[in-house]
Amino acid sequence: MFELPTVQNSKRIRATRKLRYQYVNALHREHAKLQGHLNPGVALPTPENSAAEESCDADPQRASSIVRKRRKRRLLGVLGCADSDSELSDVELQNHDDNSHHHDSEKEFYSRHEKPQESFEVWKTDQRLAVPMASRTVSYADCRQIEKNAHRRTMAKNTHIPRTAHFQYSAMRNGLEVSMPPSPAYHHVHYRQLSELLQISILHKKWENAYRCFTILIRLPGVDIRSLWGAGAAILDALSQSTKDIGTTTEFLGWLSSIYTSKSNFNHSMNLTLDPVFRSGSKTHSAKFVISWLWESLFDACSDRNSGSNNLYDNFDSRLPKLMEKISEMVLSPPYMEDPEIWFIYALCHLICADKLSARFSNQNETFSGLEKDIARNQVTQSITNAHNCLKNCLDKGEHYKFPHRFIQEQLSAFEKRLYQITKERRPQEGLKSSENDSSEPSSSDLDTQELPAQGLSPIVDEEDEDFFGRSGRVHFGFDSDESSS
Image (cartoon, rainbow, N blue to C red; front, side, top):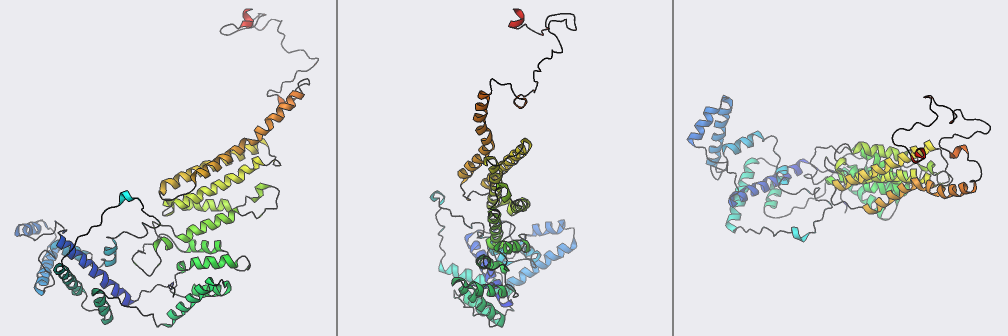
């Protein structure tokens, strides 16, 4: 009923898949030859060209290899495996021999098609970009000739294939579908039964039974845990609240992120038995369990464990700085540096940090000195600036990623206004105090210079006495003021 989280890659499956892609590629080449889309560089070797090639070849081994390739071409023409002399030219034979050990028919097939991960969650709805379908017909005689030539080229390379693979190839070539019976192996039977019990237990919300099936499945060889991380996260989310011995969803996703790397060279788009690349991750796409782990970590960091505390600053624990440090390391390397969702989570971390730090300024019970106030204000300003930079990177990296950009900008502006809320509230109070104390003497804290007039003491320099230059008047530099001219 349900898809098994196993990788089925037996010898029979590999042989059948190889024949299928070789036949499809041969059909493509024959159709391109019929439509006239051949390579113009492929042509018959003339005597002049052959002499020029042999004269310019300084290496005798290369000259002998060219002779062997031409003999092989003539032999194929005599046997009827080549339809024309231009079908297997020197260039084609050379490319075939150089890549005979490294050629992959599946890669050749998928190189002509759009990768599913490149268009994942991207829906093109603009009608102005619509183009008409290329409807070019082929006659029945030409279609039969293409199939005949493609079958001849495919079977010339696969003369010794198993009987079962040959039957499946013949059925596929005639347009039939071969039903693959389930494997009778005992471990595949166990996989199938455990997978069905797991899915049914989750549907009926029997979390204890689902947890037992999940723990057995992930310990069996050949099971890809990345195919079961969604079910495992749901089970742990339901059981972690009531059972303390079971780990949380954040711990499970963090373990997956540390075990499975995103720098895999395996082409996931070719192997249909594995998860798609946007679920398992690759060099160009972030794995979904990594992004889910970041979201879960952010939600855990925002949860108020110390909600009974009177000081709002106590809720700012070490989980959020650790998450920000982890994301700052992730965005330095692909594929995370090109993922807009990672940058958006990073921006939210800075936004929450600015919210919690600026909340101290709006709290009336919070009292701190001028130096602490300057440090806290600098921290809030730095967090707001980092949030703006992360949002800018998010907009630059992803054109199709949508988020409430205007609402976040308003929140950041509100956090910045909190920094000057105390000074605006204290100014009218200070004005009332100064009007009441106009008749009294000013205090030393209200004066910037703090020079108090002492009673009963004469000034150090008497203005009526002569100064150092022997003059009783003031010394003015530049033009005289109104007081001096009068």
